[in-house]
Length: 173
Image (cartoon, rainbow, N blue to C red; front, top):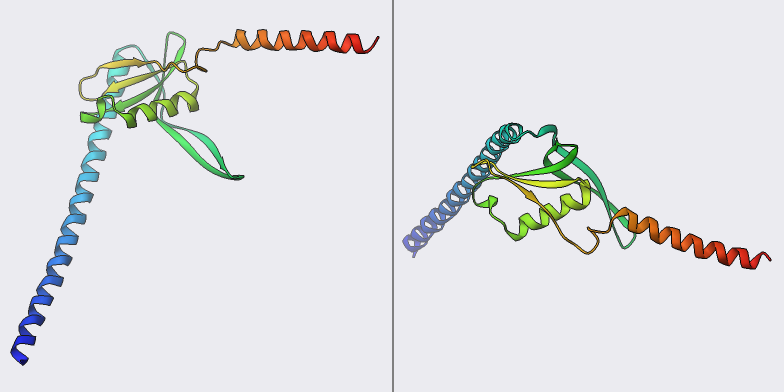
């Protein structure tokens, strides 16, 4: 019975070593993929800056952050929204997002990211730059509140003020 236990001990030891080596290799692979993805993104952003400048855009800022606060049940959480670049051209300010590879194709995560930029940066427009091909696409988001001009709000304020003025005037007689 002693020999069987010894053999079983070696099997268990081999399994433990195998699991440990598999874990280390998987971790190294994830780290390699992450570093490669970051390197490709940096390269794409460098090319995109060149593409934007060649298209007549002026780079105002890179990796710009806008602080935001989110309050949940009375507890405020500070965070930020970060864009790849802020550019200007023709008197307009744009938020530019750079994507490479498969990420350059429209997808739900990209849509959410562009919507964040739309709300946080309040820029005159947004650009989606393909860091691989150099294609610069102008992105427009149409929401019920996006197209309300400031004149509409001024008119509503004027009418409300006018009505309140009449009400106050009739009360003071």
